[in-house]
Image (cartoon, rainbow, N blue to C red; front, top):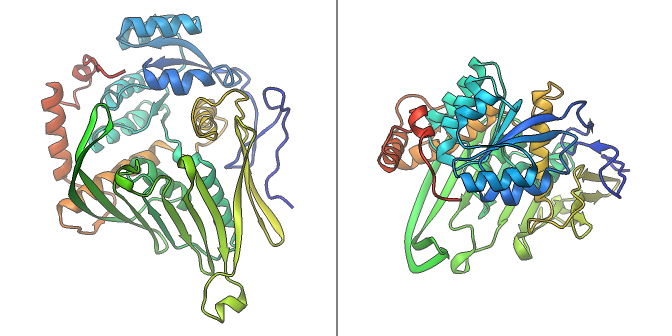
Length: 435
């Protein structure tokens, strides 16, 4: 018997969507949310644009805004909507109810705070911003103006993360108190994963780093490296739960272990494990110790593979068959077109955060990842930097007072842009050359 069910019309858009996180029916909105797309660079073109037709039951793009006129004009012409080149002009015209901010990270704070101050709900790309102070101001602006801020985080929406949460909740391997992740993706993305998995925010952080020289090598044409930094992060969650998250270079350069690395959830009588497979895909299983195994060495004697099912285009579902039941996560968002990303589940994750945002704005649901969660993910990352500066000292959360790493980063940003990164109007005037 499966724990999750769903029905589809496979020839086109689904007749019925079942949310893989809440198991509740997802229906089209009575009136799709009108949205302005702010930023028409590479991510908007390659990640967002291919999804807009599918997303019509939930959102309509009604304008685009980018200071690079040729980029804005081309995107607007493709969608058949007006182009704006200045945020204030967009706000005065107000052709939208909400906004997607898909611009360079240093611009997020100024753009979001301006939109929120005018009562415009915002879904901003990850990472949230550069500074913890900026993140705190963004959340405060959303509260002050009684509107919604969401951060477009995707990693916890990937198939293995969906599966590891429902398998752990099932109780088959006993209570999970420790999670180890090696060589996947330390930082804001993974921090969001751990907050979502435990359904709680961490209580303390500890971190160390190690840097070593390497032979000079190019990651990309504009990314040249002669050193490699290794980070080890430790997060204490409520009820004595621990996350150990560590990695060096995560692009498998210099023969390092490839992503998604190795993840292990330690349960009382077994484990949930994912290891790297070909093409940055993961291979997972549930390991279980029978009573006989527990009495004879404690090594697991049963393994149950986690199976990910696709149709050559979309990720369809994932499941594990335990002795008396199937645990399954079904993807409710099937694009039904050639995958624009090399991993077939990525479009579902992006669609998921967009639908979540649209339904939150309409008051239909509470988001599974809030701005408070994103703020904590940011604070966790800052806390690892602070702990490293203090020789691995364990720091309690939330952080308070002046933070050494934040002072240094703010000064660096001020030097780079010639203005205080907290000066909203001054930062709005900055043009970012990277597409």
